[in-house]
Image 1 (cartoon, rainbow, N blue to C red):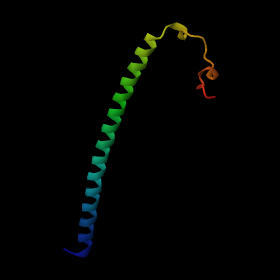
Image 2: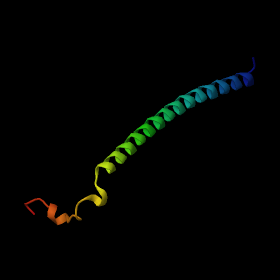
Image 3: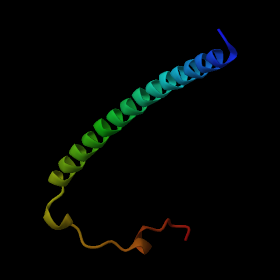
Image 4: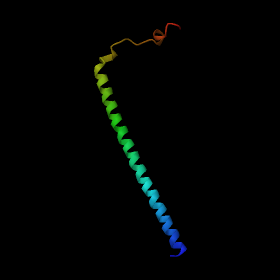
Length: 73
């Protein structure tokens, strides 16, 4: 086998290794996206449930943040 063929084989092996790592990374990213979407869906359901618990109009008058200052202010 001459030097040119050896270089082609080495380059091909290098590309195969990179492709393998890329596939693994893609699988990991897909799993991360899947888990994040599950979390988003759960949080959206919780928001819907919380909105159902709050009476229409919020039930209370608008709050003044000065009324919520700790006593040492």
